[in-house]
Structure formats: C-alpha cells, structure tokens
Length: 169
Image 1 (cartoon, rainbow, N blue to C red):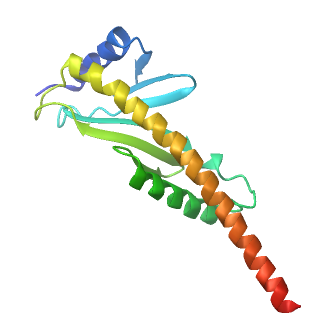
Image 2 (image 1 turned 60 degrees about the vertical axis):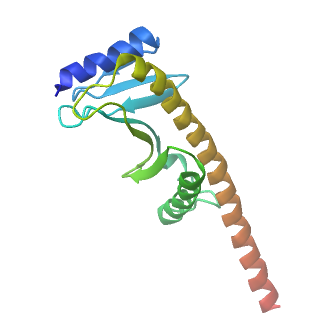
C-alpha cells in the first residue's frame, strides 16, 4: 500500500531526473508533463490502485467546431469525431479515444506493478516513453482520420445535392 505523496514523488523523480522531461504536480496529485507544445497527464490512483497507470492527452472539441462545410454544427462535429475516433480505436494498439465533455481524450492504460504496489522506477522509465509515443501516434492518426471523414462528409453532401438537382431538372 502506498499513499498519494509517495506515488507522486516516484513519478516526478522518474520523469524529471531519469527521463529529463519537465513534470509538475497538480493540486490533486496528478502529474503533468510536456514538450514541443504537447501536454500529457498521468492520473494518480493511489492509495487504492497505485499500480494502475493512465497516461493521457487531449484535444479541445472546439478545434473541430469551425463552421466549415464538414463541421457545420455541434451535432455533426460530434458524429464525425466519434466516427474518426472509432476508426483509430480499432487500428491503433494500446490507445483509446473518448469524448469527455468538451475534450477528446487519448489514453494509454496499463497495470504497471503488482497489486497495491508502486511501479519500479526502471519499469516506469521504460514504459512512459512508449506510452507517450503511442499517444502521439494516435493523435496523428486521428488527425488523418478526421480529415478523411470530413472530406467524405462534404463529398456525400455534394453528391446528395447533385442528385437532388438532377431530380429537379
């Protein structure tokens, strides 16, 4: 069994001292780190589940709510985002994408130690870069998929408009 503070100290030591990343602690004991303009978080589940590791990043949904032909309104945006997220969830190993209020959340989840134990520093130093890489790959793949889904939506709308015009003539 470990407390939240021990968990936080372990993760900060590995992220800052071993991996050389810049990590900080939030008020509730979660960890935030990032580079190249990217932000990542690690959720603190101690003392109940200190072995459960969730590394995540997010994108505001408003990024896609731009009023363009592909994303004209909230309902359409949510539908297209869900379609693209589902495609990535099927294709991308180890990452799940969910919609949480106004954010698209990309998460890698794993059991990183025995029950009620802190993950070993060496293990964290090995898996955290991989988790971050998986998240970056999923975000890139999502951006590709949302572009394709948007193009398909605009194409379908244009095709439906053309069919409607030909029926009228």
